[in-house]
Amino acid sequence: MRFWNSTKWTQLCYFLPAGVLAGLTAVSLHGYTEPVFTVEQIDTDVASAAQTTEADAEKVGKSTAVTTKAAPSVKPLSEISDGYRDGTYTGTGTGFSGPITVQVVIEGGKIKDITILSTTDDSPYIENASALLKTILATQSTNVDTISGATYSSVGLTSAVRDALQKAGGSSDSDTALPTLSAQSSSASSEVPSISAVSEPSAYRDGVYTGTGSGFAGAITVQVTVSGGQIADIVVLNTSDDSPYIDNAMTLLHIMIANNSTNVDTVSGATFSSVGLIEAVRNALANAGITDGNSSNSTPASSAVASEIPKGRFPYPDGVYYGSAEGYRGETTVAVSLKDATIDNIMVLETEDDMAFFKKAEGLLQTILQQQTTEIDTVSGATYSSEGILGAVEDALEQAKQAASGVETTTTVVTTLSTTTTETKTVTETTEQLPSIYIAGEYIGTAICYPDAYEDFYPYTLTVTVCIENDQIVSITDAEGFGSDYDTLNDMYIQRAMDGTKKFPGIAVQILTEQTTEGIDAVSGATCSSDALLTAVQDALQQALRGEG
Image 1 (tube, one colour):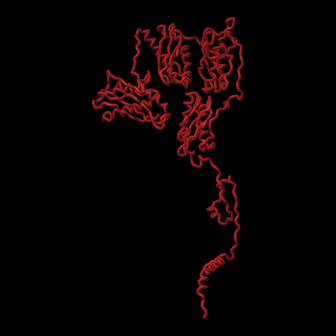
Image 2 (tube, helix red, strand yellow):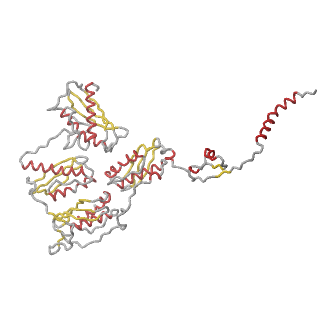
Image 3 (tube, one colour):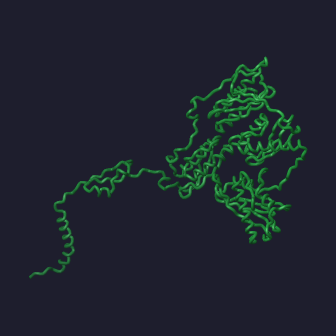
């Protein structure tokens, strides 16, 4: 009997498992035919719906073709990350008078803040247009409507923000609704209008005439005053043209008055409005011409209407009377000259309103002179300035009325109020005595100023300092607004709420006079600030009750 050598047996053990595995594999593959696989490369633009995934192949079962996934198309960063790259970016667009540059802050992939860095557009227009920045922040999109009356500035701001967002990874595809300024409306003629020189009389009959011409957006109506045979004044009564165009075109009115002629050049960039104004003035003067034979011009115009100035409506002593009233940003003061019981002249002495708006309203002065009344409509787009002018004239006429009745006119001087110093040292009469529980000292009251239904500003914190002596409120000072979203434009409204106007006493003087916060009226034009200021004073008084100064 022969035995295996132990060493050889040990070596055989190493090969035995491999042999067994090979045998099993051969048995399992018996009769197997190798399938042929194909790989199809799909164009990267094929929609994902047409792609076959591994799970889809299992559902098909017998399909032997395996297709790879198409490479994804490159998307804008703002779409991939659901936002923009964080950081601070600047962008520039073109406004009415030149470039507008903004700074856009991106946080967490979203538009966090937009600041106007520079612009040459007039303040009233850019201030109006800047309201759309809040809409951009709220909607996270530049697909916003322009602000009526500030179209160019609106487009400039929107373009600047879009420019900044492009740098932050934004996609122009998501902002295709950027408003544009076309050279004409779809209904307007494609041809730029022109106007030729005409033969004019050497002089016109004195009087006030109205006429109408065709501007860019519709009819333009003017009022022309003739004095001493010469054009003395031209006032635009009505127009639908955008402010930048009509404002530019109105410069030629001064040339007409200086030359006593309507044969003037149109203003570049405002041709439609220029032609409309020239036509309107010509139509107004069409029946006012004087020939050498002192007869009327032979060219009639049905749109020209002459009117006589009514006389003697104000039976007051001749003289100059002064009046003031509240406009948009402050008081407007005028001097009214009366002669033969008739308003002979009105001169604006002072106004705090923005000149762009005030100039719009200033045409009311000529209407008052023509109609000899202040019962006239305000100018659209300049309502506050209009009310300031009308109120100032009415105030001056009231002074004249007092002079006629022999009553000595007196001016009541109210304690000067401001956001830094609002105080009174004596209270001669009070309607409600405060209980003797206040602790003397200075207390800082706080309140939140919330926007009204228009939501034209962000909520902000308002503080005010209230001083208590001998159970009396002796001063209300240092009203101030602040907060991360605080806009310094609100300073004007806080001051208005503190100071009040000629018609509406300020919150501070009401409280100081009445020695109570009950029954205090808000100041018109600063209602939200008035409410917040009143709440802040009440907060300070609550502290005084506890002696927390």
